[in-house]
Length: 457
Image (cartoon, helix red, strand yellow):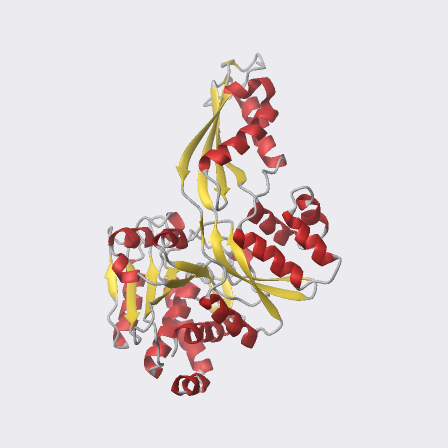
């Protein structure tokens, strides 16, 4: 009963929000653009804050300037730890086009502005603040809480979680982890859904190389490698790869349909039927951004991003290359992707197929956590308190997060960084990235209930 009474104590949420906002603004002001990251000053800032509260943070620096900070708040140890994970590096930003300096951390119009506000310094500041509140209140915990704000997520994790998993796993080893990659709110009809990320695709980058006959450009040649390559790129842009269902995507579709009236519910369930998937995406999901997201959850994908060919305008080159960002689903492999690509590219090039080479330049393996666990129940219960009309749905993120280094170690990792529906996630990696104070307050309160509901006595 003592734990139950403790959870009912009213916390000074306005003060908590103000302090968390200060920490977030300060983190944004510390430029950790990756490349080259230089996350060490941000890690040291967080370490100083934690140390002042009586914790004993560890700062690791596996390469010059590439700093991560880890701290452990002790519980009773009755159950294994919970890891609260975030990253400190951000993608580049220039002042041009921004309403407020991207490294100012300015609070204006009720929002915190700057690169990293959403991805992912906002989550780092939230985890920091909640650990501080847990420490100050002496909240009874049956699990240790591990705080980790790490380097290098945006460029592959080499000096961050990947390094920790391979060299200092003792610092972050836990049964469960909460990370970025979920918490997005979206609406279908009148129903609001919140995602929690349980799976993610793997990178499978491909180089397409078309070969042909070179010569003087004044005499057009039918065996021009740029023409061959353009046909291949057009094929990738106009043909979708086959549908593959994962556990997460099946649960996602069922959760969507359960909350919808007929006939929309049946239409959503038919997303799992490859014969009609594309029709449903186009005709039944009004929000086309959402439709594109769902499409990426259902298929391996291939997006051409870079083309290289020739050195002089008047010379037809003997080869042309394209870099293609491919992502593969859990259960798929680089070789299964190759088969799908060759089917598409073979039809596009007909007799010229032998003129095209497919080379993998970077590969990894997709990961997936069991969608239904005690932590899932804690998230559902907390969400019901703060957004009672919303439905929690598992989510397969088309990109990649640091969870891919932890799931193979046996850790159950969920992405859950909740924001209000009106937050504009198109600003992530784009212009005018910002987090509203209302959404930050919502996240702090909700995540407090998740942590205490799962790890509290």
